[in-house]
Amino acid sequence: MGKKVSVLVVDDSLICRQLISAALSDDPDVQVVGTAANGQEAVALTKELRPHVITMDVDMPVMDGLTAVEHIMAECPTPILVLTGDPRSQAPALTYRALELGALALQIKPSIDAGADAWNLTKEVKLISSVRVIRHVRGPKRTQAGTPHPTAVLPAVSMGIVAVAASTGGPQVLYRMLSELPADFPAPIVIVQHINAAFSESLASWLANASKLKVRLAQDGDTLAPGLVLVAPPDQHTLVPLRGRVVLKPGVERDGHMPSGTMLLESVAKTYGRRAVGVVLTGMGADGADGLLAIKQAGGLALAQNEESCVVFGMPGAAVERKAVDHLIHGDDVAATLARLARGESLPAGR
Image (cartoon, rainbow, N blue to C red):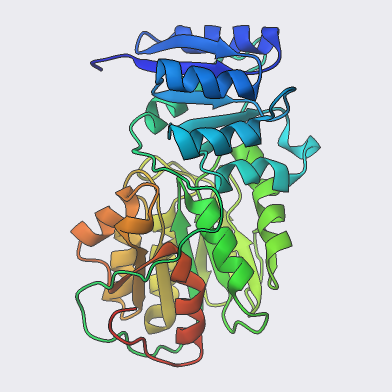
């Protein structure tokens, strides 16, 4: 790696700042350029030091981490990794509010005997350092029309299942999608969202609180039904090998991920064929691209988030490169697009 990744470490605990700094400094490609004990210091040091990445605590005096994230993303946009304690002891809405405000990812603070956790911390920091973040203007977000893929009108579909793959930036899009889908949405939804394993349960709870649909982590043997949304649990693949049935399968990573979005989408393509709808949302890497291609080749409908609305266009971009996408849609328009298709309506050009 060329230039070192510079990091600002923010935490009100001196011990935590020392632990995080030590964990990061063990990597020769990472340099801790400053530390802050509260959000106010973090905002000032971000403007002064211009770090590549910030690790941000949430619960701090003077100015909390969420307020700091909001200020930084409005005034000096920087990739932010939120570090928390055990997510089971915190309200999901608090943690995920950081993502809504522009933070890129969540990670658990390394313990004194961190070991592999510390290595994962440096890996995450280096990954998000390459993301080009955008300014988040405080106040209501301006909604823009989606950019259509250069195809004709999207045909009406007989929707049997919706399968979604998402990574960095995905939780915010999923939250909006699930909060806007109607209670009578006629197809089951299965989601692979790449996230630190410790946050899977809180992710499902956060999404469930936003939705009129029933949202929970998938379990082996689950029966799929309209109005049910299943989120893939960590450390195993979530597949749909039979119509109406979910199977959790241990194995090896595919394209660096377990659960794999591509493996979910490929299984749905085989099982549901023309009645499958695949959606690939924002995220780093190429997961989901081959799976979306399988759905398209099976006669199903392949949707992907457009570049303008992605935090990272990696996964949708890879799908576009493979010619796997029927239509590109804005991240704000996912629910409206699915609801319209579910009603048996075609989509006009330009949406």
